[in-house]
Length: 269
Image (cartoon, rainbow, N blue to C red; front, top):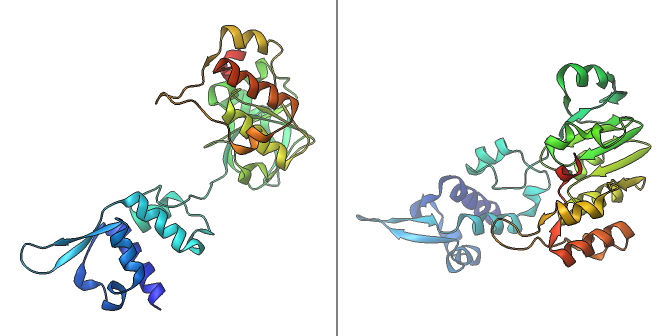
């Protein structure tokens, strides 16, 4: 029971940022867990000008992480942004559930959520089709990382592919719901792009990385620095760093050697 009360106390702190000391039971205030919140700098006691006082959140991000670590069962069912606002007044307070929203375009008929859909009609008339994915079945699928490239991908990739751009980046939740005979990943040729490629290939072994024929030329004349806006160099994830696949090793080596990478948009003339 005390554990539940302690959890409710943290939830109140995350929602309200400050709660009166008198509203917290003695058993909670005398517990080791509550001492951890104080001694760890998560919260602090603020004396009122008259009498009594309150406990105020001192480090909201640290308290969020502590809460998630203390009560991991709360996050097995991922939450939406709306849930997070209602619970914590913060859309990023907890891990959010992917809504599995995609943009999809092409010239073929495909099965989307069990319904045969003529992508050519929507592509010709509206440029793209959007859906919340439950399942998709197609012959050939190409994931395109950036939106602007997605809208003109057929300029560099054969249009027998169905092109998909995922809202919020390529994730397992969407990739697991798509079935195809062949998968292609068309990303930026940096560590993030390689990570996306390996993610798809881990789920679907029949996946290839799209590499332009003039990749070497683009690397020399159209590449950009690997440094972020903060001046730090982008670093590879563990799966990218440990991959032994020839094409991954090639691009990874180029990035380390030249401190540059080829953006997806550079592929287009």
